[in-house]
Structure formats: structure tokens, C-alpha cells
Image (cartoon, rainbow, N blue to C red):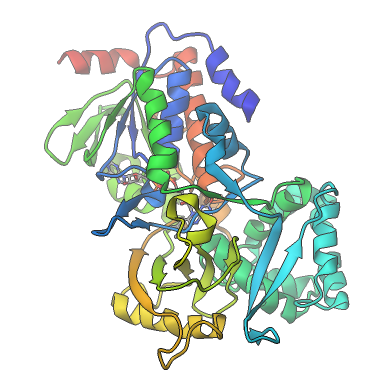
Length: 492
Ligand code: FAD
């Protein structure tokens, strides 16, 4: 990824910098804009909302506490995101945790009544894949030795046939794959329900096996692949603003609260301009959409809809998810890490008062919890969601929370619903993911749903933006972007 970044700086300088309208200031849009500016172009980022970040956006409540769209974890196996932190000079903002994966054991308690956790510890001195194998072999609380062996045998084709096999497995859900490979149901129930909910907010009966194998592949191939980090504060100020500043310092533009309402076309179906909600029009030499796929589909001009490239977007849909914040009057846990809840309604959670310096509190806990699958809950009132979450927390914190109110008290809560978040990675979706170069010569796509090898994630979004910037810069050098039309439109 460092070499890929350098390639933008080393590119032949364009005859004149292209004005590129980048729609959306999420990670894909900001990454695209950053690398376009490295290649000598002028990005103009148009963001609908008054906050940067899209699905990593965050804002303050009336008390000044931060509310986040999602609990976000960075992995060692995120080369482009880690490279971005390096290039922006903000690597110290990533707070790396011990190399472990920690699963809650709901309903099980230690001798002194506290919640039990089961840990997979990756030994620091061993390289991949040995560190992962030792982590799995040394954990005997969740899986028996024969179950681990059966799962290991099931994984052999992935190890032997690599990426080709990983991609072929997109036709199967996680549950179907487990059955086919003869892996015991308990492996699914003990580990993969939690894993599937963490990876895509859905259950293993629906999730594509390609998603799990892609993650496992990275974790088993890279020594620090599964190491996790928390950002040291809210993503808009700690990550997105530095990304925006980088391109602003190099002549780029950022226009907030600028929602595009339609894409205007020339007779040859290339983009003529963007109609904005306030009635104005934005004209550029080239355009990159980083809007989420559900919004992009609504925005497609009639003339583009029958084209196979755009038609297949109909195979992608956002998945609902809910992010919950709960402030308690005392500390509920001392675990400074991400926790897999393994409970029916919740996916992962963390005590952000410990994991994140920016939210540090030595006396109280602020739990951030991902509520998934959320399809049956997304339409319910916040109070009902908090009540159901509390029921799960009584089992997760048997010693600290009591139904009679004698334990820790909930001071306040905040519920953030995202009805259409990342694309739902059910079996067979890979075919529908579009590459960054579209059949329209001055229109490119980025966003975590577009084709790249890192799933729908912060890494996927950042990498997709970089790929779109590369495709566009190459097209500019090759002279395939129709510049005269844009120039005359600007003049007009
Ligand atoms: P977005 O962030 O959706 O950006 C699109 C932007 O386009 C938005 O800013 C939007 O406002 C703007 N836009 C939309 N319409 C218009 C319009 N008409 N005009 C102008 N602008 C417009 N990933 C991880 O790697 N690790 C995690 O732990 C993790 N946890 C998550 C937890 C939750 C609850 C959620 C919701 C997501 C999580 N993700 C995680 C996924 C990650 O957040 C996304 O994959 C990534 O942020 C998507 O970035 P993007 O730029 O592709 O899209």
C-alpha cells in the first residue's frame, strides 16, 4: 500500500489539474480526494450532511458526550488505512490492544460471581499462521479438541487453493459451508454466530462464506492481522478532518451540506453536471460517486439503468444495524478490549471509557454496543431497544447489574439506527459488486460496496477510494475523459 500511495506522487503531472467532483465525505470520498490531490488534481468534495465521515460520523449530545454511528475497530490487516494514518502523521491516534480475541460466556460466572470470558491469545513471538493456530489450540473453553480438528480439516481447501477457493465459496452461506465440510454445528453456534454478526450484522444462515474466509485468510497470513485498535476519539475530528485538511492544503475543496439531487447527462450519456438540492449545478471534468449503494440506485439517470454495469447494482442492498451507547454510574468491567457478546440481540461491545482515551472516565462506564441482526428492531422505539439490551446486560454483567436496581445505574443512553448500512453480504453478492471504472468515461465509483478485496469495512472504503483515484488519474493520462465538454460547460 505504501508503493501504491507513492505511485500517485510519481505519476506524470497532468497538463492541467482536473476538477473532480467527489460525492460524499465518508472514508471512500476522503481517501479518493486525498489521492487525487497527490496525483495533481483538484478534488471538490460534496457532502450532504453537516458532519464528515458517513458511517463513521459522530456528534455531541447536549452534555458534550460523543454519539457515534458505529463502534469501529481497526485491524492490523488494514494496510491502506494504516498507511493513511502514516501519511497523515497521526499513527499515534490508533490505540492498539493486546493481540487477543475475547468472547463473553453469557450466563457463566467466575467463582466470585463475575462474567466469564474466553480468550484466544496470539503469542507475540510466533509468526502467522503459527500464532493463530496456537491461539486456537490453547483455547479449550469454547471448542473441544476434536471440534477444532474437524474445523481445521474443513478449512484445508481454503489453505490449499487460496483466493480462487475463497471466491468460489460465495455461492454458500456460512452454515451451508459448515455442513458441506462436515464441521460440527457447535463450531457454528459457539464461534461463527458471533463472527458473522461482527463482520456483516447478520447470522451465519445468511452470510456468504467468502466473507468469513476472507477475514480468516488475512488473520492467518499476517502476523498482526487480527490485532485490533480503537481510534483515540471521535472519527470525524481524529481521522476524517486530517484527511480533509490534507487535500485542502493541496488546493482541494470541501463543501458541506451540499446534497446532490440528480446526475445530469450529455447526449452521449456522459455526465454533464450535478444538480444540487439547493437548485444550483456543479460542473466538473470528472465525477466520483461514493454514495452508499442504496442512494446511488435512486440517483441513477434513466439512460444508465439498462446498462449491465448499473443494472447489477440492484443485487446489492444495505443491511440494518443499531449502535447503542449506555452511560453507567460506575465501572462495569476492567477489560480494555473489544468483546464478542455471544448473546442473541447483541454483536460486539466495548467499554469506551477504557478503550478510547478521548472518552476516558476512571469512575464510570460508557458501553458502546452493536445491536444485530437489527431487521426486526430497526422500526421499534428507542426505549424498547434499550429495555431489550438491558435484559442482555443482566446476563453479561451478573455481578454488576441487578434487576432490583441495587447494582450499577443507567445514567443515560443513545440509540443510533442505520436502516441501510453496508451492503448485506449474503451468499452470491460478489457478482453484483461494481469495479471503480464505469462504462461512462467521466464517471467513477467508490465506496465499501465496490469491488475490492477487503469486505465492506473502513479498509474496503479507504482502498476503494484509492482505486477510484488511480482509475481516474490513469484515464486522465490516457486522455479518455472528455475534457472539452466540461470546459465548454463551465464557460457556458
Ligand atoms: P459512507 O460512510 O456511507 O459515506 C458516504 C457519504 O456519502 C456519506 O457521508 C453521505 O452523507 C454522503 N452522501 C450520501 N448521499 C449523498 C448525496 N445525495 N449528496 C452528497 N453526499 C451524499 N468497519 C470496520 O472496518 N470496522 C468496524 O468495526 C466497523 N463497524 C461498523 C459498525 C457500524 C454500526 C456501522 C454502521 C459500520 C461499521 N463498519 C465497520 C463499516 C464502515 O463504517 C463502512 O464500511 C465505511 O465507513 C463506509 O464508508 P463509505 O465511504 O464507503 O460510505
